[in-house]
Length: 270
Length: 252
Image (cartoon, rainbow over all chains, first blue to last red):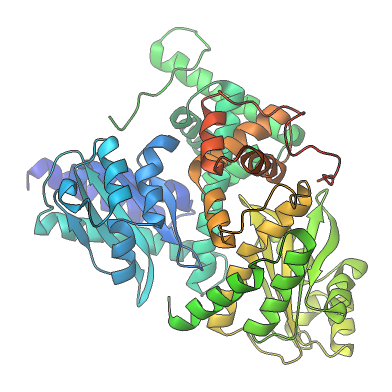
């Protein structure tokens, strides 16, 4: 482990610890977590899958916001390493996906289409309850070393704690309402991205960035902002205008000239 | 999940199999809750225009009357569950917890109902209805029954969407797909994103956007996911003349 990497890992965990003692948003924190996973573990894409009351896996957060990039995660509802990981409660490591076409025919086909070659699935749990799985997708074959697996498990634990902690804040103990609430928040976020993408002619990644920027700027929760965008009426229209205005400011300050047109963020998954 | 949970899930699925759509399915689902979740009555109500409630289904005539009681009185766990978009579990209406709704708790205990568990039925975070489970015996809903209640509230999205949308009996002859498959086909990132696009294009509430997307999938023989991707890449536009706006549609 290089000194720089060690510093990055420490700063990542300190960042999460700081957020957990504050008034955080589960969607935002877990999205940051998937990004840290990808960076620290050198994988191309990471995603968190949560199980609902029926034991069905739903995508909570991922390194990409584009629907096409989420397909490999969403397929885990039916088959794949994350589903197996959730069921067994143990990590599932697939160093070379081409060797597993018989085991998960649909999943391996979609994963190959998107350029993925290896997958590592890490369980999320709280005491004896299984909550979901963290999926790490690499573009080249290979295993995760012992240290990396431990690190991935630590990051998965952070996500589990965040979800349960958000639930305690609402005065509930049972973990099930927490899972349901997180899944529902994600659905509202996806809808809000759709609204924003359509109204402001941007892609889903940029729509997400704008929602997040607005939430940060106004010290609001990402999931609350998303809900207000979707709820309709004059309040939503004003909010959409404010989000556009903030995005224009961002473009002006980063490009140094006054163009109000928004730029599109490049694809994070190549 | 445990085998008990699997049984409840299988039981709820069975109650909806071949039950048709809309009100019939809602009644069957409520009856299934009484059979499987150790409660005495169940009612499914729909929220329209933000505040008005209507009964959609019930496990029996008594349960329907009881369910409507809180709408008449203007207070109760069901209303609060919709307001907060979160479950409201009133384990003893005759205890301190019942003081939150004095009129409703009084009327309920006179009718012999001591516990009400109200679970919101949500589409993308927005309550479109509420499933109320009531029981004569006070006390919390045990783990497996609560889990089953969440499952039933999830399944209840389908009959609610039916009633918010068109009468789909004619459009839906496909008995090969189970209710869970259909729910699963809707609960996907691209479907929610596309519903958001429709919300913006048509100026309709989220649930109605989802209704229209689903109606188009039925009518065209595509999956909800296929329709969603066409909406996202702008190769499909569901205008006001699209499937889903027939006269049978009830106002949201």
